[in-house]
Amino acid sequence: MINITINNNKLSVEKGTTIFLACKSIGIELPNFCNDERLNPSGLCRMCIVEIQGAKNLEVACGTFVREGMQIYTNSPKVRNARREILELMVSDHPLECTTCARGGSCKLQDYASMYLHNFKPKYENTPKKLPIDDSNPFYYYDPNKCILCKKCVRVCDELQEVSAIEAVDRGYNTEITPFFKEKLNDSSCVSCGNCVSVCPVGALVPKNAMFYNTKKVKTTCSYCGVGCQLELSVKDGEVVGSQPLENGVNDGLLCVKGKFGYKFINHEDRLKSPLIKKDGKFEEVSWEEAYEYIAKNYGRIKNKFGEDSMAGLSSARCSNEENYLFQKMIRGVFKTNNVDHCARL
Image 1 (tube, one colour):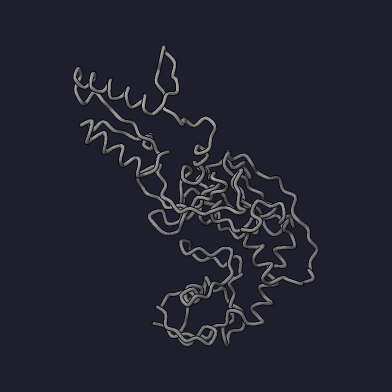
Image 2 (tube, rainbow, N blue to C red; image 1 turned 90 degrees about the horizontal axis):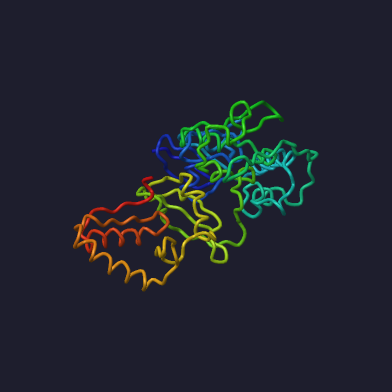
């Protein structure tokens, strides 16, 4: 164990612990854009800088390991001034469109700016980039003008998803996150998992038609397959308008394209809401009572003529897990057949 002091609070932490995690262990949340415990530390955004007594320079907390006797200050005047300078540089080339940005109200840059830059007079002229927005992907769009180059999306795509579809291209003011050779996202190796969108701290990567304002959060389990990914749905006026992975559970904060973007069927106008029976060669809507009567009548006839295994049940990932469990139990227990399948395998 290593003995350290954080803001005059003495504590012991395991050897190999970063300052960031040591602070988190006692309830101190350091500002950050690029840190993610699932990724290798990068220290790119530098917002988590702290002051270490006796050190010449400020250190990034996410990439610095604790040492015996270290005395750390997370909110000293020197630290606050440095964070203010970092934010001013970020804001200097960031479009000031908070009132119309899709991430307004859920943007880390907005939050930290209100925390550190209130009543400030900007040193730098605001000169946003004028790069084209890439909306080629069917599920999300990328606005490079709002990107703060924390590269969190690049690292998630590379280290967790292992696709490496995007990378930082060019240098200095002209740097942008893009597929190799500046391809469109839809022409790249992107698999549309949306994990880059889930971790983006600003309005650079945003789901199409998503809502962030005044939504109710509902924790649930994705029913598309048997993995059991944990996610949080955003609900507004009884309609699901967004999906975000949870960092606990089997998926460790990751989703596939189905879990991240496959929720629009819920309120889609083409969704079937009543049973259908084919009459005179055409499907017609009927009541549940008529559908059950039809099944009961024909089940007995078919079973008696062809046997129990002539029957089959096909369930759906668009039902809840509980409904799917009851369905397979009915097919196996009542219909006495193992011919039950599920569309998530397709």
